[in-house]
Image 1 (cartoon, rainbow, N blue to C red):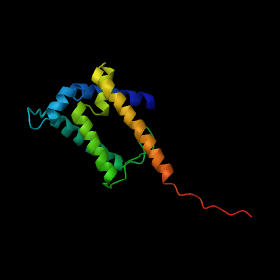
Image 2 (cartoon, helix red, strand yellow):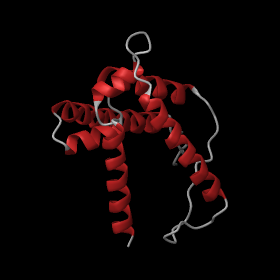
Image 3 (tube, rainbow, N blue to C red):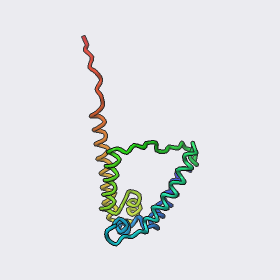
Image 4 (cartoon, helix red, strand yellow):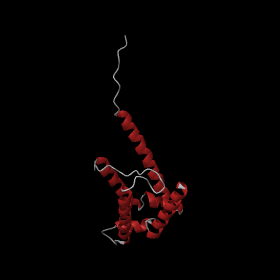
Length: 151
């Protein structure tokens, strides 16, 4: 049942991205071009998504189990730190250059869009680099156990 629900949710989400134009990088770049010929239509899409998401989070906070019986895992972090700001800036720069963010890029990849293939490959490479750096940082900052003198 979980697999079918996930599949149906993904199909609805992907269809919504196609219908709204979010999977079209030209439309997204038109929305981001505030100094040129700005296309405000995606602002309405985002406002609708924020409204639906807000209601969903309000309902989710009152529940301990999901509709399928799984545990609810809502975000608890509220800190705005350097990593969050840097990641947001990197995300925004990538979105502005490519016209894709991860979800629409996967939808466009499914539509055989060559630009999406390049974006998804770069996105996966970035994820791998992040994991490597994160692992290196975690092992580099790990406190060492004190040495014992054995006599």
